[in-house]
Length: 316
Image 1 (cartoon, rainbow, N blue to C red):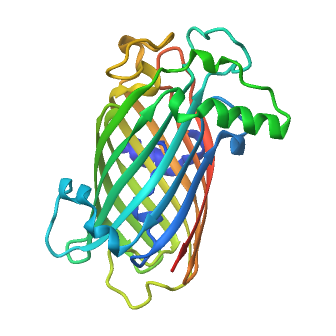
Image 2 (cartoon, rainbow, N blue to C red):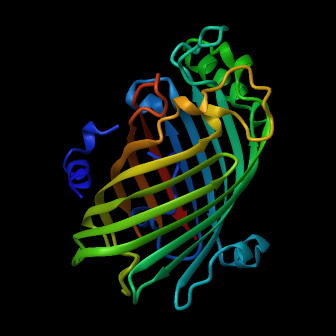
């Protein structure tokens, strides 16, 4: 418990799970909305490790008929949301301008996925259950090289030349299950939730435990209220401890072993500490967020990393 309290008190000094759109502090009331989630290490004046990611998220009642939903748990007495998203992730070493393999640093890697997800909230028992299935590809077919080179050419930055050494093509099949429980709440000004998350698949296999803290005008999604669309402005912090089983962005795909450079299993850090924190503003129809994320080193010869993000959504 002491480590969680330390993370809460010192969010700026702890170096997060990549794009996470289903946490309660990112809740948008209603069953119809679209949101753009965009991460880039440019926001923290760095250009390495997790360098960029985006997620285009669409939630609508019609997606209740998505056959993928049969793979999700179906607890009773819950408010249900169903969505689809397209997600892209990119990773680079420090010296991305070199054509040579950067021994001891992370490999170039990119992944693109189509994700089906559901969010189920029980306002009576104060819990939230998130489920998702991601299908996609990691490797050159995810066009990470083309995206980063295009951005660097447009902005006049160093052109990345090491993508020829990237993780090779392999399939992504990943299942995720998340649980969040309200622990403490003070009106619409403060909430503290416990959170647990499990990911299984060919992209990553890991478990996470942590806390979600929100302070401000929050209107908790765990409460039954006729003011769900009220103005909201709050700060959040999400400290997490991860236990890592497999990470294809470092170790290469499960089925294709032809990648020119990977991080060996023995070099993977099996425990990482991380924190997401940021500021959210919501109106009756719009969602705005600025976030920062930090993570301890993910392999023995690596460094801690950080990045920022923006999220813009609207209800319809």
